[in-house]
Length: 224
Length: 416
Ligand SMILES: [Zn+2]
Ligand SMILES: [Zn+2]
Ligand SMILES: [Zn+2]
Image (tube, rainbow over all chains, first blue to last red; front, side):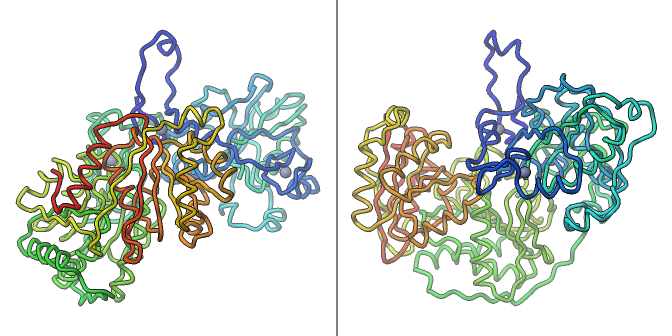
């Protein structure tokens, strides 16, 4: 058994307890490193690090002025240098095994939702990477999800400015089919890998809200 | 040949054999270092190699492609703003001879011997003869530092810099990179210099030495450099090809560590600054010097740092994943920080003036690390000795061996 983050061997202690526990693919030192949260004030809504603690940060106020907001945003890992490295490896060197590492940090009551919906990736990104980094983590965590969103965005969103992204057409659309039309009155959870400006997730929510769900929350693995 | 993703001719139909679990790029064949998952996109299982994934994934659904490059000599002049000492010159001559004879070499040199400069002449000669040159190290910090120094000396050469996440490449003729990057080269370099050979991620990892072998051209010279060689390195180079340098470039002795029998974890867990440590730091600061405190684990360092900072305002700490790492090191260099707690990340590649060193929990360090840590002191001609303290709960073979190695160096002997 090796740690999928640092590739060092994990000593397996064959006592009664670990024999029945599912073995974790992450060693203790790596687990500690990736669990760190930077100290400092945070936005009460999106959990961004801010100079002065307040209920909503300027970014959240900006989004609130342009989009309908989710019920709440949950964030699983702080975007520290180590976590940044983790996601870089997972997304850009195609180290798919790290989905299991990220899955270990998902502490969310998925049972409270009728449906989990991952943010989709474009065909170009799929060709490059070969997997949707968000749904792969959900699969590793054995969380059922539905791919009801699709995207036709061509350019990397991060290359566009905030204003340009607001005026550009919403890159998401709902797939045809029963799953999307059955959202009415349901509690849904939109899942994304990294929350940066928040625009991506809010554009996805815009589409989902058209199906009149009862509530929509956001889960993001990490928060830039 | 150079392995390139997405371009060039096909060298292997796929990077990984999914049935035999063999990686054709890094020759990993240990099953536990492969990861297998079902890919809906490919409609099949994908197996990829974890040993070399950080330089671009080698997997069972993608071919390995290679490009060929032509050899090209260059004048390769260099500039050195001091003269090599007699011992440095003799070592340099031996390496030049090895280059002509296509034999390997082990440069066994005390910390602070000035070994980088010793290979300048061989690098220049190799490039004049059209051989491709690689200067590699297992540590990213060392790679960056060496690239800076070589760029300063070989001002007319285009020197590639390669490590995870960074790629500044020209024509792959003069390359500074981490050892892992060598997996992408086959039969390519006429001269490979491996710095800090003992710092291999797992020093017993023969696979990396195999990568060096494969990246080297049929007739070539590999120079391993280290302050603490092991049997494997001597076998690699051949016992007759060992060159030793026991004197630092400025000619002074290395400081011998003073061992203080004191554990610190008990105090730290009670949120008390250990009295022995406080006394040592006070003494160092009173003399106008600065100190690196080496701590075995991040978790212990996190508990210790606030205790030290409460008594010595401005005391900081640094570890490998630290985002402000380079800023903190700079701050130590220019004297704004005078007490810096660190993990083994600063055991190599850094030079600070007027530096003393304290190692807490010294019983948990191995001798390769301890020798490097001791080597941080006395690196400047105007402060050539420095002080070293080991705080240890009990004695270990590694502590004894470290002191023996240093005493032997001072007596002009090696420890094999
Ligand atoms: Zn690990
Ligand atoms: Zn906010
Ligand atoms: Zn490999």
